[in-house]
Length: 161
Image (cartoon, rainbow, N blue to C red; front, side, top):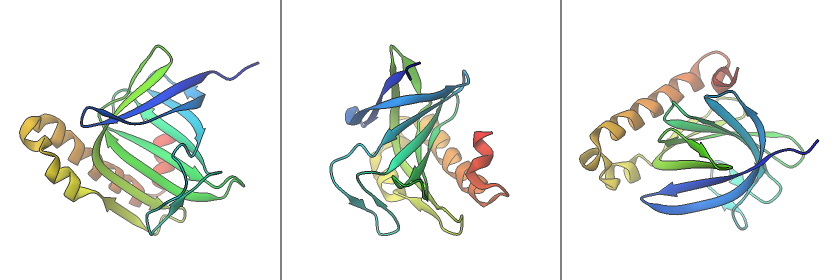
């Protein structure tokens, strides 16, 4: 049996930010989960985590929620943590998962002790609050919901059951 492959396309401000193949893990009708190796070139060091060749991302996208949750592990399977993108709800069509990044992000360390809200300055500068106030409000609500879930018993894993 072969695993279905999808293409994940992440756009930001109308431009393709990254595009990569991913193996389908599950599709519940609302949540679609895929697995893919680190798709960017080289190492990306954020200071609080490094994404590097060999890392494996299990990514969860929802058709009805304004975020994506990405579990990040080393190639040896050691959990690094969860990187969450605030996005418009995912569109899945023609073998592609289409996701629009809305700038806001959340990082949760593997032990759950570190929960970092990221890129709030980029979000404010994006102009989304003026151009699409409803989307901006949904984005802020999504970030708040992710942060609350990260602090709840079971952490982000509670979203994946």
